[in-house]
Length: 339
Image 1 (cartoon, rainbow, N blue to C red):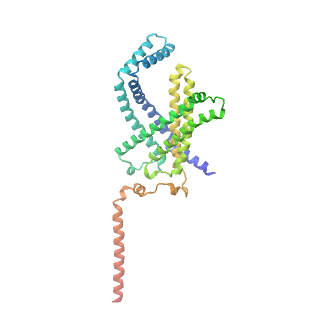
Image 2 (image 1 turned 30 degrees about the vertical axis):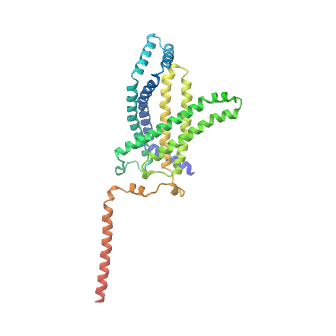
Image 3 (image 1 turned 45 degrees about the vertical axis):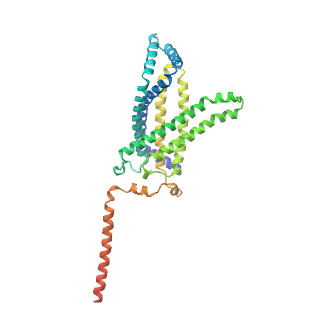
């Protein structure tokens, strides 16, 4: 059997044995729940921005009223939606702060769940060693830092993908090079390539930051897994943009279809992240990995079980006493033979 096939089999077995599908479903659930406070914060921030632009608010009301009137049979529905928009703008400050606070709380919990799911695929044994569990408050700080970095990276990646999908026609028409096929293709590929680079950095950060220090893999394997995850993630984003634009042609499908597609894509991303984690964790060590792996003195301290910390001096003292006793006995026998 070829090594890459054996590695693939080990990855699948690790993913299934460590409940990868169940963890991916849990990540999907918590991700969808985290979207609610994020949307609340987004509406509050949008209200703060639109409060000083009444003309934009009126245009927004007109578009929403037009959309509601085409899908609802009752004439009062549009007026109710308009009053809801006015109420949301009037309470914009409270909605923004409440949404941000709840988003941080749920986001830290989501990052903690993602961390535990990745570590379940990563560590050598399925059972978690309680002696190596990190401090609770230190874990919260790490989850917050990871959440901020991940959120910033995902936002940048999504913006780059959106630009690559929608702004290409505008750029080519502005430059007057619509007939140049290779330039048009290059303008489409360049933002995607930049997004893949951003995604690679995101996944490298996750696979480097989420596992415990003594379980970190060599950097070369981390980069390989991060590149694969970034390419797959970019394909899923393009699929999401395509399906959402496809469902947007119908008002009913735009509401329910977008939610269903979002859940499917989140689940696929979660599965992909855990599978790549299992792939990295089941890689066989090579000779050239020793140079890139983290093998500092802190790793040895982390691997050492806490229960042996107090036993090591006792063992050293016992060995020393045994050596002194053996030397004293040998010297006594030598003196006795001379006498």
